Length: 149
Image (cartoon, rainbow, N blue to C red; front, side, top):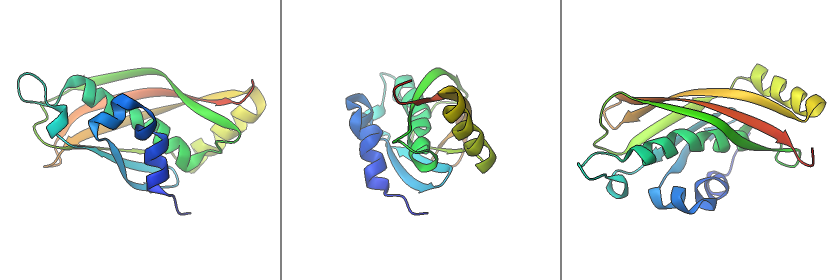
């Protein structure tokens, strides 16, 4: 299945002014998989490393982008209900994050949304610098919620 990265970028980072400012964007996408990047330049803090809020944003956005690759937006929508970030080392370059959700998990979420009106899915991710070093890890608790329920 092909996904229009430009459309997904507009529906995720492009629809949130702060996220748009960070320059976060989807760079790879397929069903159940998203890779996003964030440039360094506009995300520098007062000591010359990537700002913690930008890192949080890079860790949170893939949950929405991944939603568009796996779920039917005419039936439900995503929200984040909990997010944690563990900062492991300073980021001094552009950063990337990848997230995946299995076919089995997609089916479970779809079934629960149909039956109960909502379903929780957890995404654990690693945020890496340009050298591929893991600089932060995130855990996000997302919900797919049925429209009108």
